[in-house]
Amino acid sequence: MIRSTWQRRLAILVVAAATTSLVACSHEEAKQAAEAQKCGPSTSKPADTTTPDDGTVPAPNPDAKNWGQSEGCVYTGPGDFTLDLSDCPSSWDNNAGITDDEIRLFTSMPHSGALAAYGAISEGIKTYLDYVNRNGGVQGRKVTIDVKDDQYQPDQTRKNVEEAVQSGDYAASFAVLGSPNNLNLMDYTDKNCVGHFMVAASDNEFGDPTNHPWTTGFGLDYYNESGIWASWIKEKFPQGAKVATISIGNALGQAYINGFKRAVAQTDGIEIIDEQTNDVTAPNVDNEVTSAAASKADVVVVAEAGTFCTQAIGAIEKSSWDPVVVAAQPCAQIQTTYAPLGKQGLTGNGTNVVRYYYAPTDPDNANKEFAQLYTDTVTAAGLDAKNAQIANGWFWAWYVVQALQDASVMKGGLTRASINIAAHSYTSTYPLMIEGVEGSVSGTQDAYPFEAGGMYTYTGATPSTTGHFEPAGPLIDNGGKLGNWEKAKAGK
Image 1 (cartoon, rainbow, N blue to C red):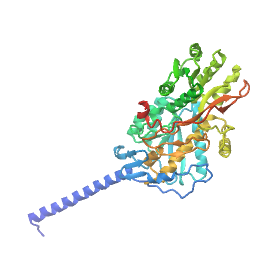
Image 2 (cartoon, rainbow, N blue to C red):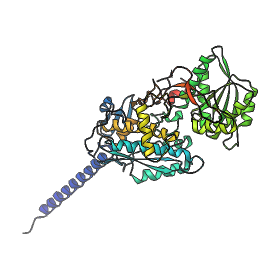
Image 3 (cartoon, rainbow, N blue to C red):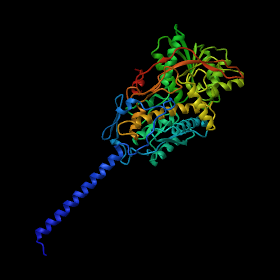
Image 4 (cartoon, rainbow, N blue to C red):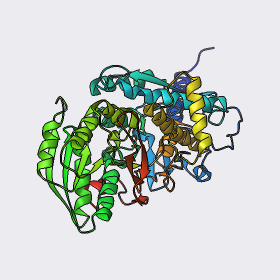
């Protein structure tokens, strides 16, 4: 049969239109698939389990079900926090690192080098997660965390994180250690939409959900801690006090001093009359203590870390100067800071620090059952239950599990985005918290989880035996006053 010219042309047009339609459909389907991968809800289905009701594993918060996926690529949480996944990389997968039976996390911290002792934090995290996994996991999923050694070198931390991100194997990172290490990551994790949560550093910059929505801080931040110092000094010296400071010359020391100056500016009767800073490579802090002593200040604030804590406290004790000594959190560990003083015939008695959660071995700890669980679990794993960093790991891991529990019941289910929302919106009380303290954040309105604590005095030590901490006043609660980094740095 011979077709006419117009019939042939019509056939060609029909075929072309059909082809165009198929291509358009194919393109639209690909677009929808890409958006579903980037923004869609959970694609995994965990087994049904229940959380133990004995208080050893945090349960999901009832309000968490109200948050999560709002519409399309937008996820919302409390405290005016909104997360839009539209700007995430085109190949980004909202379900990466999450399967029916596993949640894969990663962290980076030193396991070799001068600060390798801090690597024990990850051992504590792992032993608590193992306990959780043996008791049903997080809504039926086991939680695993891969630990990468960075020797506390920021460049190596960055390399470790980049490799983990590029692998596409992980849902998020938690508890990456160190101030400079984490500050070096914030822009990268934002750009790549990677969870950089509950970092193991207390700089206030990590409480900036508006500008850095993929990062959250953890622990008692430096501004809140130094604010507690100022409130306590004011109570102890109602007629006024002159203060000297001795600090390590790095970001940690500077952050503490900046926070203390901020608090002093808001507190009547306290005057900083002398400031001493030691280089991080100095052999000791003897010169700094001698110079501070010459000021005859009523109070000395020791914002040091590591062996500098022991050196400063010991040098003050040996001197004729008798100030009230206030020391920062890095100087609050009995085994690492105070026990070594005995070799010099010293004790460290009288040093005052902020505490907001108990060591499991602390006799004042009211939750003996959880403390015993910690000791039994850690010992069974072949670890030293008296190691403060392992205990810190349990503290961190509790809140990691809390965030994952909350994310699991959010709208859209457990995804990388819902983990982000949960890391910005939890309320939970670790079983070993000081009475009256809880961990709580609420989006952009309150980005600092721990804002209360009590001053405790180290006492009862002899050169041959370690002492203990006793309360030195009532709980000081600054809850909600800082809000976020923008507000905090403005001094409001």
